[in-house]
Image 1: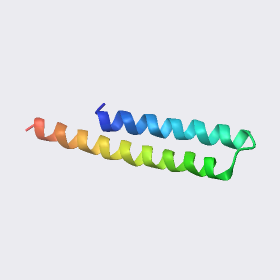
Image 2: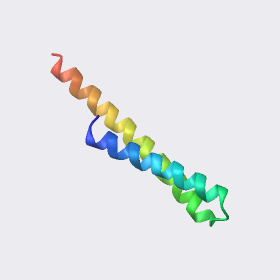
Image 3: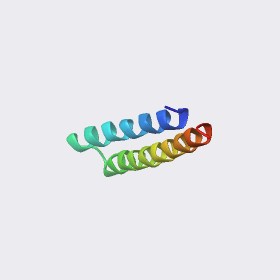
Length: 62
């Protein structure tokens, strides 16, 4: 995995954990929203990282 994909995956998973713990407890709604935003950023970053890896693999196959 590239660094972008790895960092994005970690951010997304941390956002998931934050959102779950905030929803279980009596946390502020802003923490839940922050967790979901981190999940979305992580997913988008992982998709871009995977696309970059596929482009690089396609170029090296030539």
